[in-house]
Image (cartoon, rainbow, N blue to C red; front, side, top):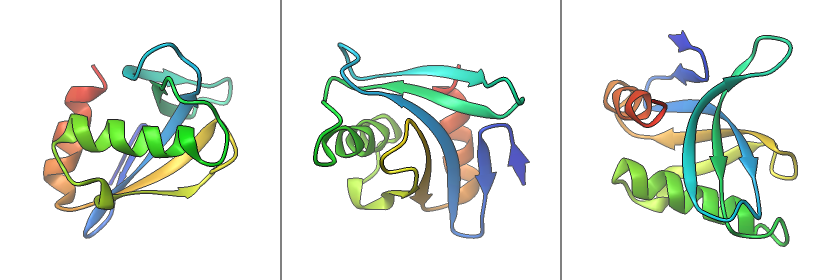
Length: 104
């Protein structure tokens, strides 16, 4: 199932995230859409985009907000880009519900 920024898989979800490093705070800011109509979850972190610090901060932020272990969060594409694909392992239905709440 695909729903905007989120795709459910059998044992995980994959989400599109646009990350703003050096954003002054660590926060999830809802869902936005680019000029081609692709939706993504907006996130910002205080960390700088050097040596994977911003990506690690994003993983910690998502894990914290979802109440899961950080080992379940993996950036699978876009490690050096602002727009990333993140895989979150676990029950897809539960994760989808929790992410929908975060996106508000």
